Amino acid sequence: MGAICNSVERFYCSIRHFEKVLENHPFDREALGNLAVASAMSDDFNRAQSYFAAYFGSGGYGHDVIYWYAKTLHNMGRTDEAIRWEAEYLRVTESRGLASPVEK
Image (cartoon, rainbow, N blue to C red):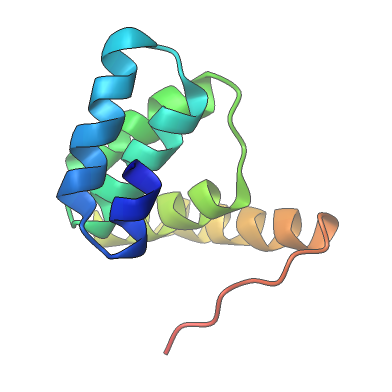
């Protein structure tokens, strides 16, 4: 359900869904990553930051989550850290043979 909410850009719906998942499975890495990204996409960068920390702390390292973490750091004014994570994102996507998104 949370993925459907994300696909139609209803991020608060996604956040509610994945928070319910965490109530039953507090260490669910996929839920943590989705909460981090959905929070960032809804411009709630402080909330996103806490979910990113939990996601990476649980061993998560998805390229899409790395991308949104870099964007979050940039939006929080943490430019130097954002640049390091942007470089890490490029390294990870290249090593996995993935295409990176292009933004205008």
